[in-house]
Image (cartoon, rainbow, N blue to C red; front, side, top):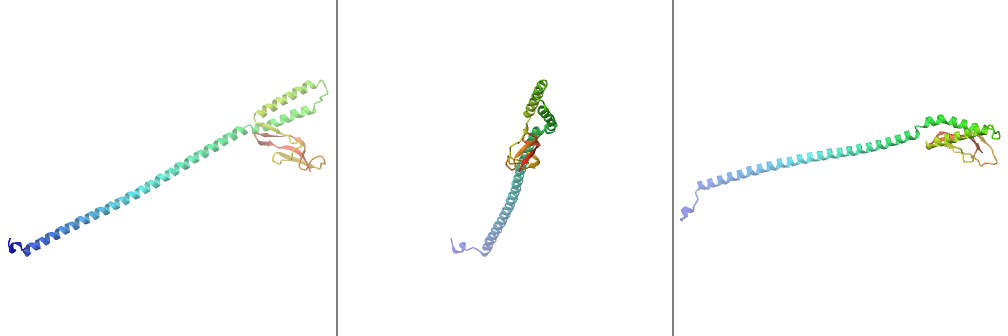
Length: 198
């Protein structure tokens, strides 16, 4: 090859530069498109991440709501059980209060009876048996007598009708029970009426 053949004409050189510029412009366009696609991808990823966070927050909120609802139901169940238990225990409260005068009257009849009189003895035995049966029956349902003679005065269970000085009793001790008290399943339905020593 001669020198002349190796020489590139200006025209060819311009053509090569022009093509190189076109290739570079096309490469820049492709790069811009890829960048745009990357930006779109990043935006889409950010959007999806935000949606995921929102969904997770909703799920957490719903789980909290479910836990609160469960706790509320459990509390309601406990309250209801407690109320049913109280209703069962104290359903007889009013009825028991109405029976107390009957017990009192049977006890008064026994105390007033002349135990020496042979004619009265069979009648007294019948009243005592009736009293015992009656007391045993009501005690099965949780009714207990409060007879605190000689015990320390307790304002929750006793009602002081009078206070007297007594050398034979310690201060604040029940000297005498005027009327027995009663409790139903641990709840006082009538305090014992007492005389207290000072």
